[in-house]
Amino acid sequence: MCQTRQECPDCQACPGRQDRETNPSGPRPGPGPETPGTPGPRNQERQLRGITVSRELLQVRTVSRSFPVRSRGARDARGAEDAGEETLFVRAVNGVSFTLAAGECVGLVGESGCGKSTLGRLVCALDRPDEGEIFFDGAPLPPVSPASPAIGRIQMVFQDPFSSLDPRMRVGTSVAEGLESRGFQKRRPMNRAAVREAVHDIFARVGLAGMEKRYPHEFSGGQRQRVALARALVTRPDLVVCDEPVSALDASVQAQVLNVMRELQEEFGQAQLFISHNLAVVGFMCSRVLVMYLGELVEELAAQDLAHARHPYTQALYQAMPSAAGSDKKLVVLEGELPSPLHLPTGCHFHPRCPRADEVCRQKAPAWRELAPGWRVRCHKADRI
Image 1 (cartoon, rainbow, N blue to C red):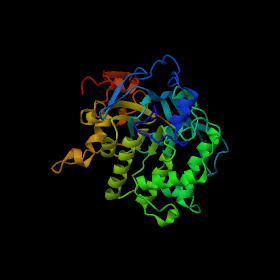
Image 2: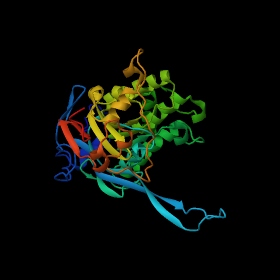
Image 3: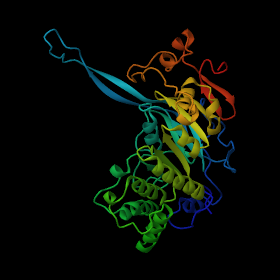
Image 4: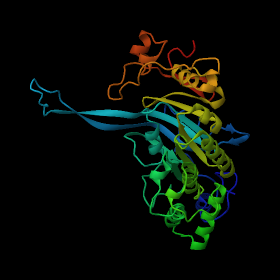
């Protein structure tokens, strides 16, 4: 049985097998003492649906990522454009720190454009941070390469499964590529019979038994998302990043896919970073929630405490849910537009839209306040709300 999950076949596709062979005495030690701003002790135990986990699989430490944007100069009196250009920077992720325990499912919520997907790509090593560090299983997260020790151990489920699948390749072949890459990295390739058996098994688990030889266009949207799940889980990863996996699906199909995802997460025991706009979905899937606004985390709390959130932004997101408002109440709509990430507001970035903002909020950026173990918030007025 693997150290990183509850149940797993002891096969060559299992990353826990390599861990036991290379380090039979136990998991590798962490990266050392935590830097300031890193939330919580590294070995703190968490209770997840009746299962206590103590090993922190992922550590994100003050990570930032910016993208350059060229801004052309103003036009002159004749309407001709000035040849001068100015390079501005979009701060997509700004000083984000959090941890993720083995087997834990953590939600990441926020409006479109707040940096959720960028942070997910950084965690998967599909992009590299400008500042900060990311540790995976006690070691710095390496860049993506065929020889990376994280190959097969970190997987991603994208929002649009059709664009992430090769239209000219049978879905069974696409799913098998993960096993082949994992075998190449371990220098112990699986034979074809073992690969076929593993692919057949994972398709059966996601409810698509016997459909391995079809092409992506032969599936519905919900079925394609199940194929994407099969591709992510076939290597028995330690961490899966789910980027809006059900936002493009109908409500009934969403429920089916979410049930499959939760059942497989509980069966395989992999950690999940679940990115979504929908707090109801996050509350169903996750035990802990990270709230993001303009590239920064503003609140971290247990999913069961969302109704009692202390940051005005988290409160607005929760009150905008139809189930939270009730049939006899109007939905609470957050006024104002998301400020431009090219020109961030001074002080608290949320103050232009906050009904409780005062001069302190406009001038001074709030620091983290710990309200309870596992509950922290960045708001000057958190103790008065």
